[in-house]
Length: 154
Image (cartoon, rainbow, N blue to C red; front, side):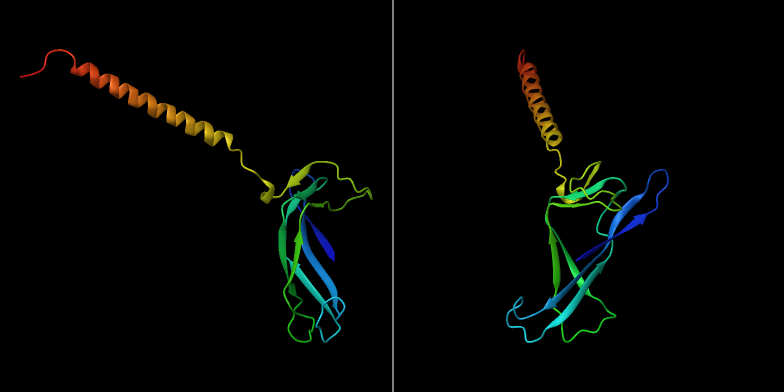
C-alpha cells in the first residue's frame, strides 16, 4: 500500500499538504482468496484528495473512514475485478516528515467525523425559552385576575 502526499501552495504560511493518492497492489492467490482459479496481481488506486492539514502539523482521524479504490484504467486486467475498499481508524498522517520517531508532535488537525458538537449552548437556550414562556403565562394569569376584581359592567 502506498500513500502519496501533495504540497498545496498557500500564501502567508508554510502551506498545506493533502493525501492525494492511495494505491494498493495485491496478488490474488488461492491461499489468500479461497475458491480463486487464477493467480494474478491487481492494482487499485484512488486519486483524489482525502484530507489536508498545515505543513508541520499532523492529521488525525479516530473515526472509521472507508475509501473505495478503483481499477487503473491503463492496466489490463483478466476478467472483472472485485471492489476494493480501504478502511482506516485511528489514522495519523504527517507529510514531509524529517524524523523516524513514531510519536507525532506539533499541531493536530482533526477530521470532521471526529467533531462532536457542543450541546451546552442549545440546552441553555432551550431552558431560557422555557423560563420565558413560564414568566409570560404567570404574567397573563395575574393580569387577567386583576381586571376581574372591582365592579362589573351592567
